[in-house]
Image (cartoon, rainbow, N blue to C red; front, side, top):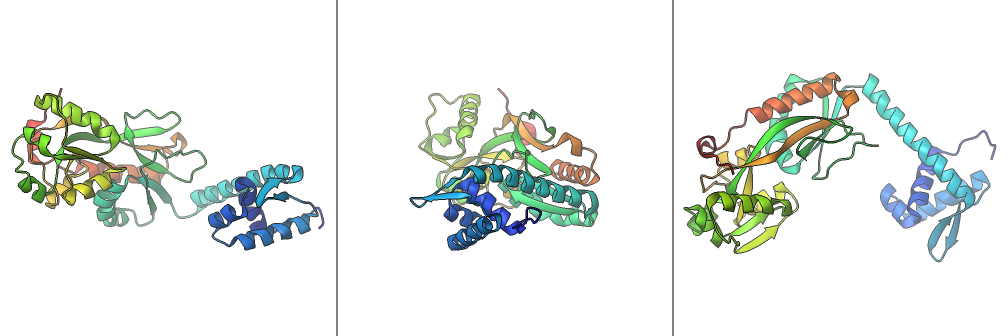
Length: 309
């Protein structure tokens, strides 16, 4: 092969995956092809280059010295191509906002209201992915993400979009079956939630004056969406996060049986790269999301009977 002639891009992408994972099988899974296709492409690349890139040993792979050096350069080149393509779209393509949203917020608030965003901003393409992870913007194509916390994330700009209060919620059937009338009745309930919500339950018990509070049973789940669905199915009491869960109360899928509300110091924040602050599409999404969350009302009891420690 002539030194000036470049290998086909698809061979370089396959090589990058195989070299990074040191497995034709794992590379095949990542690229959605068969392991034999990966193996064939790597032999094709080695023939084009006239160099061995892999040691094939005991069903495993090791990079040769040439393969290791080539992978460093190929990986860097592919990342630069990806960044250049994204930058091209951002500068000259249709304005796009790529947003990472918490699953419950997406299901109950964002998706039902998307038509209003599309009506207000028909020129902006909104792409939503749901995730409970603290998204890392480094090397990501995300533009904005919703995060839960106190609002201090180094290297990122942020705006608090929602204060939070919590109260126990459950299905109407569970409230009737357990005859939930006073806060003391939570001793007879199964508690649902995220592991980090244990301190919210403890705080609620302290506010309510419950001594030596121990729940009948606890079930921990990995997201607010899973917790709310478990509560809807009558599996127990969950900490309702408001106003995020207001649509669930309004629709009658959940009820808040006790007039006790716990302020939560953390809140929901929208975060983005500081250099993107003045981009019109991101400003439009920030304004729309802020107004959407600002339009939510707490259940009536929360406005008059919120308790604090």
